[in-house]
Length: 413
Ligand SMILES: *Cc1c(COP(=O)(O)O)cnc(C)c1O
Image (cartoon, rainbow, N blue to C red; front, side, top):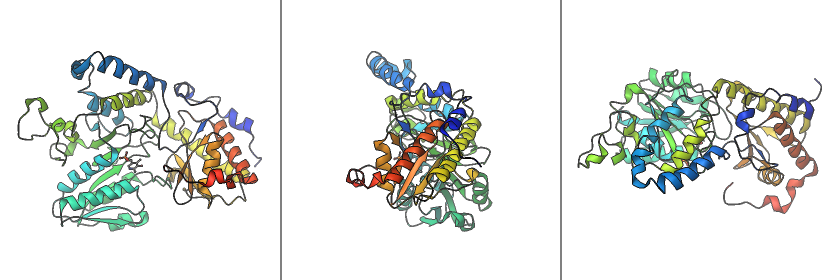
């Protein structure tokens, strides 16, 4: 096989289905954004929506905007738009709170639907907040519940008739390994357990079909591949068949059947609104809505195909151009087994990523020694992948990463 050139990579972008989407992102000049994906970049419409929400809806509309600007309906309206991206129906998804808070709400709600079963099962090495929150759910529910974690290949066998809920992250935040959603959900159901999927690294990145997999509950993140901005609210999904029975523990007034009746007793709202707790973060949710709207004409199958094309190119270029530098692949080599990012391991991973960032190639570092690259077709091109690998090759060849400027650790990695 002849080695690829930059021109070959540029040629792969000529018929990009996402050129018009890329133009909507306000990426800084000479920045290749391969964050994978702790924070999606700014979309022009989000800047405009933030300004309009603050100046007009808040500034002029004042309290009237709860009705006149659609603030009250926003969590469900936006949930309906996200539903389309994850194989859910309208009225099964609501935007609320953070992913951590939503893990608490849905895991506790699911466990309550399986009284008398002790175990909540999750994966060893899952994203920490999921494990911390599940530990909190068990302590909150008392002696009767226990969090059990297993290596990913042991999970299906670990599910038994004492398992209440299985809570897993669909795409692993470091390795990018992707669970077979259909098979694991079936294993949970075969044992009478309920299934919760965390879609933080999946939504907007890979094709997801929650209802096709008969998933019971899910949560996901607004600021990663949905590009909703720092601290954007998250979402929660409850399958329609469960909604009438579901009671979540944070039963705040926005989840009440009639919040403005101001009665003492809690009656949950009929549908997905019962997953709400308090007043929604309207500015953040408005910005998230503008971000989600750019997916309106996007086919997730095409996103997935292009993401695979970008990541396969990355792997090929790493092999052709970065051989012998001690970078090893942490993610599955098989594209079907991984999500939309790739992690490499190197002892000097932190310094290497700092050196890349200094050259405008922004990825992430994850402890202890992983560097992670995201492949987001809406704004990343094949030629960007070439330029990123070229920067990496130069950093490795010249050992530029060994400079003390790159080895000092900052608070947020
Ligand atoms: C990013 C991420 C979160 C984030 O939780 P926050 O409450 O937004 O801090 C949770 N779970 C997983 C799996 C994630 O990747």
